[in-house]
Image 1 (cartoon, helix red, strand yellow):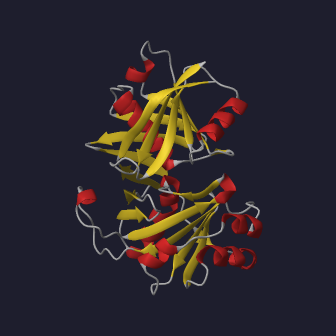
Image 2 (cartoon, rainbow, N blue to C red):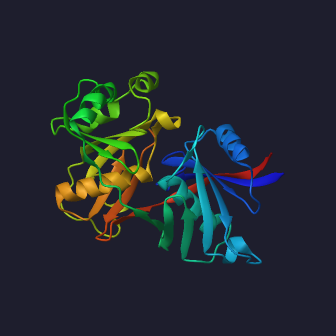
Length: 300
């Protein structure tokens, strides 16, 4: 069987930056084992499998509803922002979909992607982090230290729905401190078994004050928040730009700063930008750009 495959850099408009994801359009279902083996072979943080719902004659062009699943090299995950953005970009830009609004049926519920000029906006559930219990603080303290080393920590919270631990660095820490972190993957795996935490977000204020305009991607290099994300429990030592992490970061920083629209930078070596708008209905809008880097076929 020959399948189309696209590699898309998400949350950027420049090739070889942002977060790469593979997108595989499917008209026929594949066995679970095959989905996982293909994701392992591609070895990107996520491989997205998308298939149309309905019996349209030209489903990639005319359908506006799709099934969507995400696989890391080691397991299926319930939510992935950058691979959803990559999938929407592939449908709009490479497969000629004529819709301006696409619905994805996923294990995290219904997700919506819509075109907004050169941006794609993802409608995702918010996943606000919560305080740790005394027992959790004791159990996870060694993990936090394993990630940030000797940097001072201001706040540690947990998003139970995503199993993401949010670690806010003290205001005395700098962007250079954040970018210099090099946690040892093997050490992190030895410090926690992944039962409570599947990924660690390290975040810091970006220093930007006030709301941002609609075209804030091209304004300045200042941000409301900076972050990095480490998820070796999902087979990802560091994820370059993480949409699902910003469903946690958005509610946290929105409450802290008293703003609903945030300009965010994930400071991985590849790096990427997105705008997070926190809504009153318990959801967030993630706005970003994407670019196709590879297009071809794979035989399985």
